[in-house]
Image 1: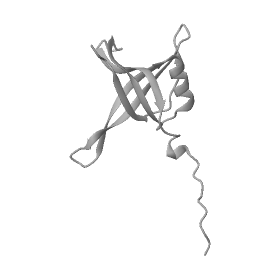
Image 2: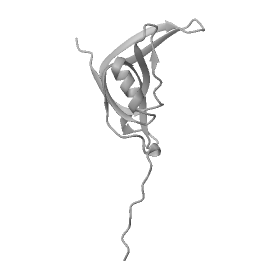
Image 3: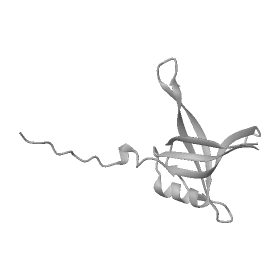
Image 4: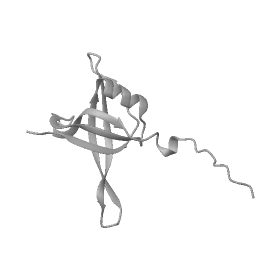
Length: 121
C-alpha cells in the first residue's frame, strides 16, 4: 500500500507552535492549495488542507514562516475522529508531514518595498 501526498500552497494564518504534555513540539497549520481550474464565475477555488507537523519541522516552520508563506508539504494522509462538546462525532482528515520546504520569501504585504532609482534624462 502507498500513502504519500505532496502539496504546495500558502499558510492561511501565522503558525502557533504548541507543545505536548511530554514536551514535543507540534504545529497544526492549514495550507490553501489552488485548484487547477476556474469555477463557473471565472474565479480560482482553493482547498484548505490541515497539516500536522512535529519536532524540528514544527519548530522551523513556526520560526521562519508567516501567514501567506508558500510551503511544500510531503507526508501521508491520516484520518481520526472525536466527539465534540455537543456529543457529535467529528471526522478529521489531515496530512501528517514528513517534511516541509519553504518555497518563497515572506508574503509581499510583509516585505518592505524599495524604490527603484530611475534614470534622469
